[in-house]
Image 1 (cartoon, helix red, strand yellow):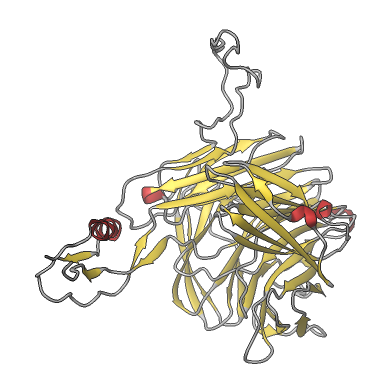
Image 2 (cartoon, one colour):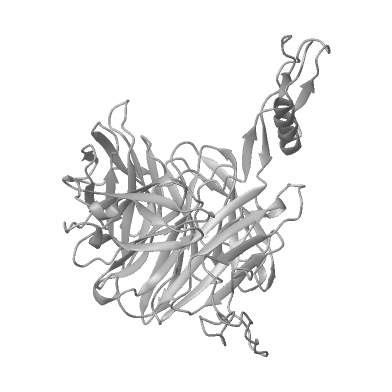
Length: 516
């Protein structure tokens, strides 16, 4: 007799339920039909992780959650950012709870709000197209673990922006909350005496993750036994001071985070004496050609840090895609990157009063994959401020960035290949206003810097969504500037494709099997 294994049928039926394209051919129904082309469908679940914002009593943090309007017809869903650890209520002792001897719960006092706990989100988004915000000034604010489902999952983004007016961590620290992964590269950190850089690891899952941290300086790997086998407990976050992981003091270090088990969100918080502080997010995966978009026109210093993780050295062309054309910085047109050694070059005020972006590409036809980031300085002396721009992928179909303000938001659009056209949507404001939509043409080989047209009647903050309409790839970043004490504090967030859709193959499989 012929039989069809139930597990195989169940797997195909499950795929059909997710994609809507699977089909079964039962035994005796003839030959299996030809497979249909793969389709792109909206994702049904997204995860984001935000690091603990600051330990300073002078820090104020804003969280912004946003999902762009889309065509998904799935369930309504929700998008929540929850504390990585429960926090006690304002009026509770941390040890409050059941009496150990009597087993009775203490009476709860009424009339006071509670801090967010494991069952009370810090930020909850219920509708697409309009951001939701929340603020905190707590010095012990935890890392956040977020999940979006249904129609709120495709393109979900969250921004964490912290303003610290004084102290060693002074600056505007911005980070787009990251998806969990198993492999991260951070060129641009440091272990010198002037640095207080931390790598933050957040575990979103219910089982412990084990991570390794490797450090690479200009002469190769730094000795770092303390970076091996780091346990990140379930649904928790740990922060490690990078200079304590090695005895070697180096200005330019590439940090490599991998996991042995589980997955984490990883991001580096950089703090430099007398220069400011910001978040350094991971470079895009190692590749032969990189784009680092959005150097502000008034940058007083640009420092490029690059790393070749493979066994071969890399020789790359360094080009600035400026306002009108692409050119090589004088004296720094190429960079030699030795295998597994961090290379750097000071490009100084390379933009010379115009916005620009850096492109790294192989000197010869066959290149070596590399990762890279830029350290950008605005201002001088006591009024200087730093931000980081990692290499990033193109906008693709769509990308968004949250927490834009009525003043201080600038969008950079770079077309490293052919001329491209993009649509930029400024969402409704978090407290009111109507969205605006505008189309921009970016000439090939140039960087276009635009001040977004803010939503009509804007109240609160808003989000920006960039969609590629035609032409070549576009890379983008957003610069947010806030002036505090005469210092132009700023932060830069890149806008890679949001991954809101996934390619799912159609399934039409003949499940008949041979006779037993």
